[in-house]
Each structure stands twice: as structure tokens, then as C-alpha cells.
Image: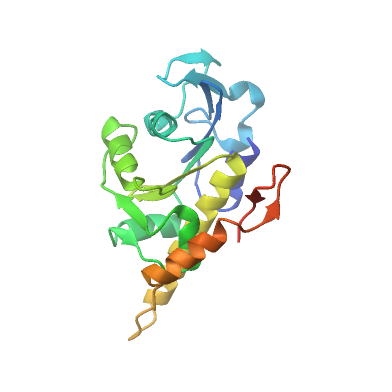
Length: 213
């Protein structure tokens, strides 16, 4: 619930838009549809299996459940965050891919692709999302819709969402300068940054790096 509320506080969603989920074993805990985040209580959360059958809770799940489940079935995602962030959504209407304007592009697996527009809550939207995430991407834009990111933890998924919105805002700001074209990272520069990012942060109990740039 804290992460769902944070999407509102940080301006990534408005009203009841956007949704959050976490995988627990073979179950997915997900936010309900149509409930303002400030009114969410633990009893409002619900759990479904990987086929979408509700096993806990009484409220209807988010209409974007097909996207969440498609991600869990296709990847090792531990958590998923979907938002309607303004700058990222604006970028989704302008280009087919967010150019590598900053090295944090590497934290999302490479230049962020834009999935084709499809009606919300449909299998078509989920299929387009998976195609945009192919090749190791951990986040993508949904044309005329918003963003979706995933990670091994909810904190990581949220951080990727925030980074994606920041990069979209950066690119829009840079391209707005009259008569100027922003420089972009080359493939070599991005590969170097991606490699360095993989070892960035404090070492956890297992010795693996955690955190972000």
C-alpha cells in the first residue's frame, strides 16, 4: 500500500489510475480497481493465481491484471509497477523508443521501447508490452497510456519507474531547446555504463550489489 500511495505522492498517477503487484510464490498480490490509494487498507488487497483466479479478497482486481500476469508468467519478476506518469506518457506519443539520453538507460536493459497502443486491460496490450520488453528490458512505455516496469523487489520496480519518468522528462527538456539537438550515448558508452551499473551499490548479505546509481 505504501508504494501505491507513493505513486500518487510522486505525481506518477492521478486518481485511481496505475496499479502495483507483488508475487508471493505462485500467487500475486495486486491492488484493486477503482479504489483511491489513500483509502486502501490491508483488507482491500487481493490475491490471484497466475491464471487470474481470485483466491483472497472480495474486491475486483485492477483492470490491468492481464499485463501483470503476463509479466510474471514470462519473466522472473517479483514485483510490477504500472503508472500514467506525465512525461513518460508524453514521450510515448512522440517516438517509438526513448533515446539513450542518460546512462541510467542501462538500468532498464537498454533504450526503452514503446509498445503499440491497445485498449487497456486487454490481452493485446499485454502482448505488445511483452514484445517491447524482449531482450532483457525491465521497463517500457505504453503508447498513449503510461509506463510499466518490473524488478526482483517492489523497491526495485518502483525505482525503475521513477528513473524512467525522470529520463523522459530529461529528454523532453533537452529536445525543447530551440535549434539544439541533444547528444545521445553511443552503443559502446551505454554498454560500459550498463556493465558498471550491474555492480553498483552496497553489497548485500550474499555479496551481490544492491541499490541504484
